[in-house]
Length: 142
Length: 443
Ligand SMILES: Nc1ncnc2c1ncn2[C@@H]1O[C@H](COP(=O)(O)OP(=O)(O)OP(=O)(O)O)[C@@H](O)[C@H]1O
Ligand code: SF4
Ligand code: SF4
Ligand SMILES: [Mg+2]
Image (cartoon, each protein chain N blue to C red):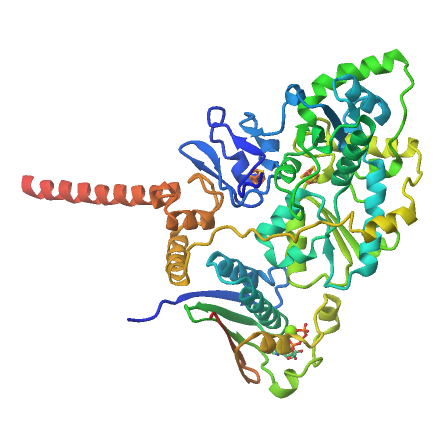
């Protein structure tokens, strides 16, 4: 018997700041509607929001996929964009290449990726320059 | 009395024509039209009264007390919302209105003036000690508190744990009445004259308190026709009426008087539920941490546009501003007394704000996964135009209602029309084939 799994994909458009944050809001509503614990939802929501904003800010487009099983919640983000040349550097708190306009909107503290890692039980990021970035994070339900 | 699902409104099926006006305005998708009549989903309603405002058939009935049913208590104190002072045409002073309340059967009528000042001080003292995450969210509009409890459970700890002026005023007025008359406190009945049904809910079940100090509420719209002639009597009698209201008290009809220690540029004032929803969403995402305080009102012009008011809210607001100018600007509160009472916790809520998440799609995660999958499958087949003809406010809520067995997919008129058209096309094609067939036979 295959284990129960709920899957839903969201398309994210780069630089679309008007709709930015909708996917993570919807993910949060969906998890609430599934009756998951609010501490878990909060961690997933923070991570999903940071990942979504990174693709809006830096990538051309992205697909963000939510997976829910009885054991864990996984968010998988695949984007097409510039990629990250030095992941170790990007993962450092305070490192940011955000433009002046992005900082104006309140982004660019260089805290997004570190925040995702802090809130996830499992976290993996791979990237290819000029192609895109893939990020997978998992939070255990139990 | 604590009823988990107490609401201050009721849908009257005999008056409801199922027009769906309320379905569209309800900010929490708490209404469905079933078998031609509006019904409420109890764990989602925040008692904002938007449905009362739009219903042309008066089919949404507020469950406030009727003014005639207030007899039978030893001593009854009326405590009007400052919004009441803005409802009467001509320059009617708050003192006149309070006198009219006394002349129409209330033993006493008390203003919020002292308690508004006291609450402003209490907010200042609370902020001086507060070290938690920002911003704090005002807790004086009961609809906003319910909205946070239902939709933003992570933010309940950011609700301001300070009692509202109406609660403080009711407590003080009851204590004073008991002292003046020698009656026991529980024989003094405090009646709030309310601009909205939401405050009725906060009387029966007050978030952050074991019990409200207010005992019942009468709607401004119910009291208005009774009070108007008495006000004219008071005016023509030329009796001198004491003026106990202050400019600060009047300001609370549409906005909170914040202490000067909370500079305006560090606070946000938000009116109207769609705006409140957006702000709470941003707070939830951690975006507004640089602000210290967010004042939220469910109604667009503050309490002067509550669902049980009678005057045009913009006129009411202008009147409040004029009254404010004519009333004394004095601060009735003694700072030393305030500090001592604050330290005794007299202005603090007494229990934590609870969360009230609506029931999920499934009791256990396996059921929830299955139902959410089913929901997405159904939603994918729906037109996504949110027409409401199925009786659910949006296609997304309809999909959930189908999964939960509360609606049937066949109720979607757009799907049904598509099926009918297909059926017709199929019949037409069969008909054409049959004619051709016959044509051949004849030849
Ligand atoms: N999807 C992505 N594509 C390309 N570059 C990225 C992507 N995500 C992150 N980066 C790079 O990594 C840096 C650090 O990202 P991080 O999310 O930690 O901080 P930030 O987005 O700059 O600021 P903040 O998240 O605090 O608003 C970014 O400035 C950017 O250079
Ligand atoms: S009172 Fe407000 S939340 Fe409740 S059903 Fe009416 S519109 Fe919806
Ligand atoms: S803004 Fe005032 S009148 Fe409107 S629901 Fe809130 S408390 Fe009631
Ligand atoms: Mg970021």
